[in-house]
Image 1 (cartoon, rainbow, N blue to C red):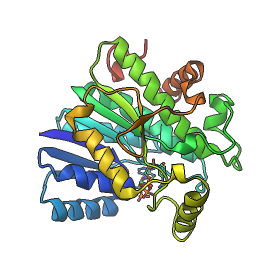
Image 2 (cartoon, rainbow, N blue to C red):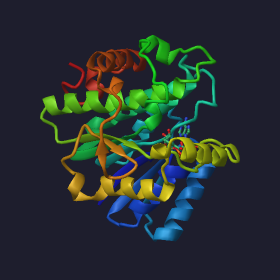
Image 3 (cartoon, helix red, strand yellow):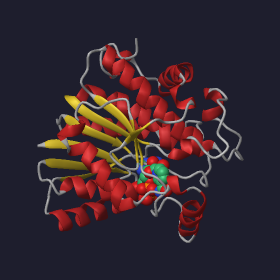
Amino acid sequence: MKTVIITGANSGLGYETAKKIAKDKEYRVILACRNKDKANEAKEEIIKETDNHNIIPMIVDISSLHSVRSFVEEFKKLDLKLDVLVCNAGISPMISGTTDEGFELVFATNYLGHFLLTNLLLPFMSKDARIINITSDMHNPPGGIEWKGVEYLAHPPADDRKKYSYSKLCNIYLTYELDERLKKLGSKITVNAFNPGMMKTNFSAAPRNAAQVAFVKMTMPDRVGDLNKSSTALAEIVTNNEFSDITGKYFDRSVKIKNSSELSYNKENRLELWNKSVEWTNLKNDETINGLLD
Ligand SMILES: NC(=O)c1ccc[n+]([C@@H]2O[C@H](COP(=O)([O-])OP(=O)(O)OC[C@H]3O[C@@H](n4cnc5c(N)ncnc54)[C@H](OP(=O)(O)O)[C@@H]3O)[C@@H](O)[C@H]2O)c1
């Protein structure tokens, strides 16, 4: 039996993907959610629809480095090898704030918590595990974004409307940097980025969400996604043998690979982000796989 962790699995893309994966009873699905009631509700629904009883709700507030560390401690107690990690939890740029640990909330939720989670879980992954980071084509918004250094990303001015784009660019930098480091170590663990496209979910509350989707359909049809299609593709990338060797790629709203933005291939930026993330999260060499931080 294989074990999958999906963050933010009680709603939208995470929930639909969890349900699709759970249809195959060879998969145990851990729903990593911040709200216990919502996690339990999702668990019951998935069991009802799939008859797969290996659905485990676990609590994590991914924006909190402390909570991420507690989650990993709880996971270790299960004594399972992890086969798939889907870093999906995310919030929209309409939400603002600063975490108790002093990071801008969108950056901490969409990127930094997942950086720590991934690194801490790596030692517990199977040899050919798959990591999938959910990004967005808004990593390259209309008009583009310029690199302002990592301190800016973690502590932008409150009115920076591009903070979501930066956080999703960070998901891609993490994908490419981790991929290169894993390859150097001779690891068979794969890491890819997935853009689901603009979908109707709880991401930005209705009716704004419906209006946004309609606007994007009209103005940027190549950015429109579909919850059913994207969750089906994501479940395929998680489960299908066809994808076992594919790594360091950007999947675009399907199982099709595409190039991400030019900025996302900048190696200096991604190294700056990696190094600073190690410092911010206080990640130690012996907390992740041997040699990864060298
Ligand atoms: N919808 C779109 O148009 C779109 C487009 C491109 C990319 N994406 C990406 O797709 C991913 C999934 O979003 P979605 O559209 O499915 O939105 P969604 O329906 O709002 O789902 C987001 C999930 O993340 C969880 N979450 C948020 N903050 C969290 C935290 N601090 N700790 C743990 N879980 C947390 C939410 O939990 P609660 O239910 O407790 O809030 C929810 O389960 C995100 O990474 C998003 O950036 C979405």
